[in-house]
Image (tube, rainbow, N blue to C red; front, side, top):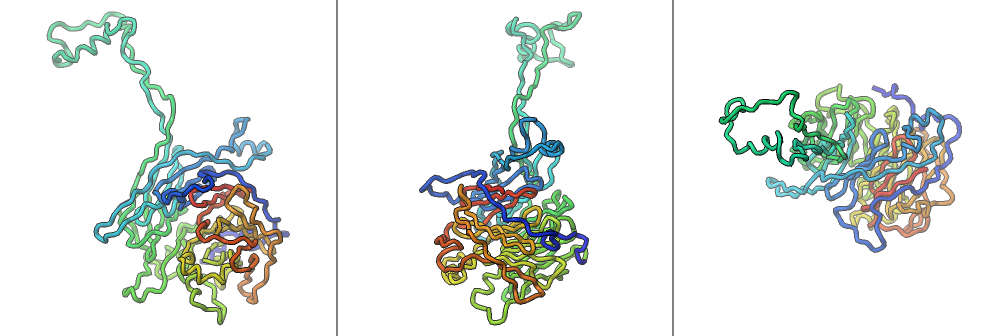
Length: 511
């Protein structure tokens, strides 16, 4: 299994010079805070996910709610769909715009009486499933339970005409049908006094009720609940490209589910040792390959990524490929293993590349080259002298997510002080943009992008990029704030548009 048929991405064999850096602009904000407004813990966003088309966006929060947004700019005044207009060479100058669609309570707080453990309602991950018959389907999970949701527009039906003739009051046939409730019935509906003879030509006053649909409302219904399969906290769920199965991962195990079967799952990865004292690493993230239904990757707290093939065995204890970077001699410190832990991995759209995020860096891996990452991007190198402080306040254990653009030319991830960074991953690119989650995203922008410096190792072909490295301040000389962190963000699947979460606010940008 070499993955050679996946096709090369832009980062592998780019043609021509790298694209110029993108100029990001503010698009929208949902749930913007006013100055001095206190954020409620339950309102803090904990998950963001675009669907495959990019027309819908879902967010989950710590209060167990899922909020859905839908795109509104794909139709214009001509009434045609976006694709139709593109075929007609209409210029589409509007940037992506979304509107609130609906929300529902996905999870409630629970208590595990056997383990005397509170299970919080916080949404850890959301994944969109294939749509069908105009309905939206998605998976959401908290620490223990995964739920499969169907969101569909239901028409509100009302009875507009009753079987009553208003000209005769309650008379006629309608009155007999109403007032006859107190009379005793005989077999076949006959009356004891005298039979009713239907007049010739029918009954003009008899009108059947007419049901009309005046409006529609969105209804979210939980179709299935996948529970009691994880002893430890679920950190990942991922849909398979076959549209039928998905995986869920906790610290020590990965389970394979069928969407239609909620009471049974298959354990495909188990790293739990016979003696828990021998435990050296845990699973931190897992994701299916975007097109090969038999391949998936998972990352560990030791900074390694394992690619496994479900065709090899039922229990995938052995991996097909192992991706890890050898640490430089003499660089080991107390914090080395902590900051090496990978918090998130994402496959590129074509499946050729894997993006991983550890505490200090983003790394881009080619699944055909396991000697080391093809590119490494320094996210906040200026924090390295502050690792001791970060350890003291537990910030060093923060789990930042990462994302790739649909064209594979750029990657993005978050940092502290509500900033996020966008890097160009094409060979020769110097793009290293710093943006703030606010209405003025370029406020913290570095005016002169740092130059890439080649690593001494020609084998790994590592490209390193970093901002200014003055301790106590970020890449632009601004003091950083550990309490405001941008952990969750998502890149639109087909356009240069990013959605990111700053506490309870959802910010959207386009380029």
